[in-house]
Length: 501
Ligand code: HEM
Image (cartoon, rainbow, N blue to C red; front, side, top):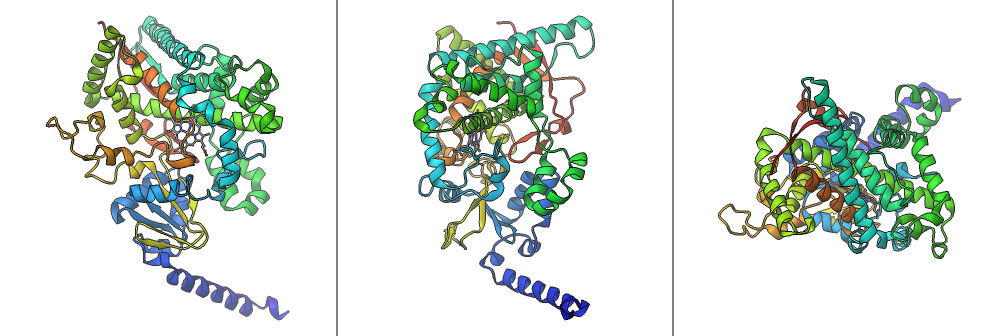
């Protein structure tokens, strides 16, 4: 009975709090730069996450405290190239992922993305990495598929813009590129995974619905509760589902399972044909899970990155970029030069991904047992450490002067504006973190770059784009999801004006 006495309970609680406070104050992390409260609590960080605002919250802390910031009692964020190398590249694939990635299991299976440790990750990567090698992406049927979808995007723009024109309304020539770009990304990635079983969402409404289901997911809060408070989630999950919807993508699930069932039809360049090979010993569900994961990874990232970039290009302050790009594209067309050799197009894409990285936020990893030193600070084993592309690509103003200004010129060799190299080209490239780095960096990078460049070529060789009627800056503010970020309004109207040669 003594055990239940209020006095004993209160004293035990007080003792527990004192022990925790002392441990936190004596932790090596307590002397790191960062807000004082973060020695004791992670609540402000979690609040920012629940409000879909983690990236900017962390960035503001870096602006205030510098390249190393304690975010929570056991969590530290870094921005230097040396820290990126240590966390994401040491030993090849860097430190192990944290349980945060449990949120990304598919059909109850771990995919390459959601494996936490090196060995299972390495095994899966060996099975599939060759499908995403630049040589496979740039080959015959694979690249022809992207080119074809680029043309379909332009046809959709022409069709929708002329429909608007015919109504004679004020928003003539407007197209919602948020939807069209995600449809393009869906058709490209599903081509690469399943061809000829991929989608045609740029032209077929039923396929577009599958894409909208994936892209429109609003399960952030629900999934965060399941991660941080699993017991509460188990107790009140049903009630929570009413106010904060869980992640459910039945159409996409069916689409992938149906394609996986017919895997004998998949062309040799596809991911499905590779994973279906018996030598890898993967069962049907694991193959479907990996394919679904790549499909989802390929839709929002490329779709959002292009959407933010084209919105920026359409602003009056960036029309000179469109003009310079158009000149390069037309010149290349005359000379028969390939899009993958164009320096300005490359600079536009790099700057787009610097300013608007589709995965802008922290990629959390555990410091290995025994601890490590990062940026001169001693980190105990099991500390959560991370870098976020949004800050890594902005914080050092000697590399990126006026970091919030969209300026592709900074990626051209003559970056000092006097026709000479400012000597920082290599350092700028090292600080480019939009695809992460090391063995766990983005496997789809070459595919994503090809999709982005082909689409920009097809649009800007012919059209000038301007902001659509009714669009406001706050609709295009960044809204964090679990790991990627999308425009708050989930809509981006642009006007397409044919630009005669
Ligand atoms: C602009 C487009 C893209 C960006 C900015 C991007 C960015 C990233 C980043 C930052 C990571 C590391 C994530 C982490 O460590 O938590 C990643 C991993 C990954 N990405 Fe992408 N990605 C893009 C497009 C794609 C595409 C088209 C695919 C299609 C296959 C893809 C598939 C993956 C996969 C499977 C991983 C996990 C790699 C691993 O753990 O080994 N991504 N991506």
